[in-house]
Image (cartoon, rainbow, N blue to C red; front, top):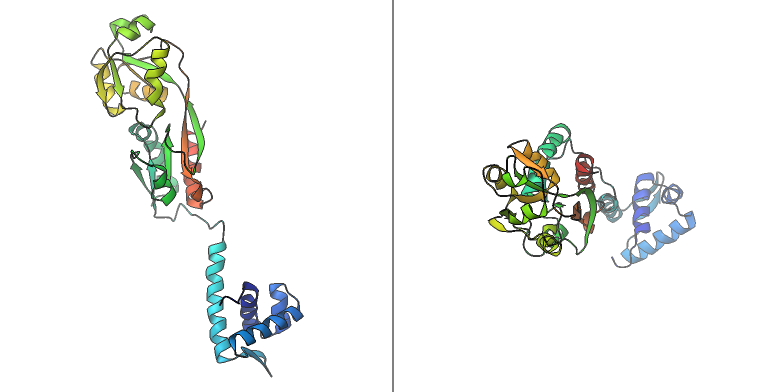
Length: 298
């Protein structure tokens, strides 16, 4: 097997179908002389005539017939494997995509994603996965997870990314909060009790550092792991919270809240798609990324 290469195998397949050495040579793009030499080398290597001349053209020996059939199957498998762009039909697919996203990502994106799937990919499922504490890139590398969506800081090794949109921080308090009747100011921000959310693995890890640097430190009174518990708490207390503007606008539709700019200028941050370079050209992964960009990209 080590002595064989692809051209002689393609020659065997073409010769078995045409029964003519010249036609077989032309089909695979070599001269008749090269085809004759290749067939001679195969006969010598495999110790069988493979094809013999008959009144009905070149016909295979029993061994040649069996070999040609095996070669045809192998070439079909090889062609399938070499196809760089196999089609992905979302309307016919039944796969489930696994996506790392936060509770905020679920809240903001899942309604639109499910509506899009219902129209374009009715049998495709979507499974939300939490960000693991260690080596999240390995989940993307293995293919266990297809995408990560968010403002993450740990997805680096072997990962590619594409910006979806730029986000900015806002402050949120109940609508009739006495400290903010006239809007936001540094003194009220610093004196009000704050609700804070676990920032591990997100760009928000640096938020307190930024606020302290600008001399407007927070005074945390409530610590929670997720943002989604906060709308009712904020609306019924004197707590304030710093959060993403898109999330704040969604919350504002549910309960009476007041959205204000921070007391100092804070940098915007990027919400992105992350995927492993192994799947950069995978048609299913490309389709899923395109859906995210079309629905949420700026």
